[in-house]
Amino acid sequence: MITITHYLILSAILFTLGVVGVLIRRNAIIIFMCIELMLNAVNLSFVAFAHYLNSMQGQLFVFFTMTVAAAEAAVGLAIIVAVFRNKETVNIDDINIMKW
Amino acid sequence: MEVYLFYIVATITVVSGVYLIFEKNPVFGALYLIQTMVSIAVLYILLEAQFVAAVQIIVYAGAIMVLFLFVIMLLNLDIKEEAKNALPFQRIPAILMGIALFTVIGIVIKSKLMQGKHDQYTTAYVNSMGNTKLIGNLLFTEYLLPFEITSILLFVAAIGAIMLAKRKL
Image 1 (cartoon, rainbow over the protein chains, first blue to last red):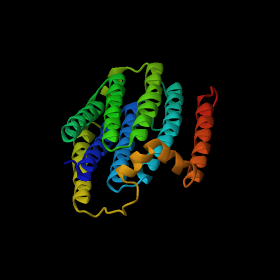
Image 2 (image 1 turned 120 degrees about the horizontal axis):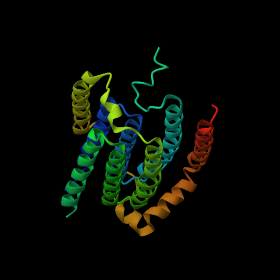
Image 3 (image 1 turned 90 degrees about the vertical axis):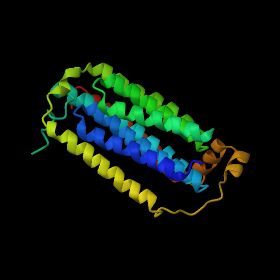
């Protein structure tokens, strides 16, 4: 029998993978994909909760999260392209003009 | 049957997630992420959220990942570029902190702190009406204001992307 705990543990694993990916990678696009992975992990726990609580709100929230993710992907990738045009790189070690 | 399907799909999801964060080539990374998203769509179907599963495939695995792949192809990245890592010592602590984070989340999940109110939408009730129809009903009645705000958000995002893409910023 698959309980909500199984889904939440899977969601936690995926979220952790996303966090580790953001921390260890240096390519801005891969970091961005890891952020999408984290969003997906949270969506999965939303739907799991919605199913096991006989609720519809979780699925509606996932709908809104996906919209925000689509907007975020469009703007974020536009920023990455703009940065690449100026600095000829997407390695985040070279993009540090706002650091100090 | 459902149990086996869950374990198989969960394994595929986690393995492709691991491949995503260790893959050197961004194109393959994007393909692994698509695999992760399709597997999550299968899990949504197991959770009887058919509409969300369809939207997951269309919006995430379709639109968003095509955008990612398009940008990767457009930038024509050098795979070797990541070799010059300014913080090579960050790798091991990051993985250890990831394990610590997973432990903390696991403790919270195990400790039964999360309890919610049961609602009326049981599987039988949802199936009698149809998942998509029910979501549509709620979206255009109870959640109409968030839905309209979402349209403004998408509008602003489109304007922002166009502004950022201009030649002279």
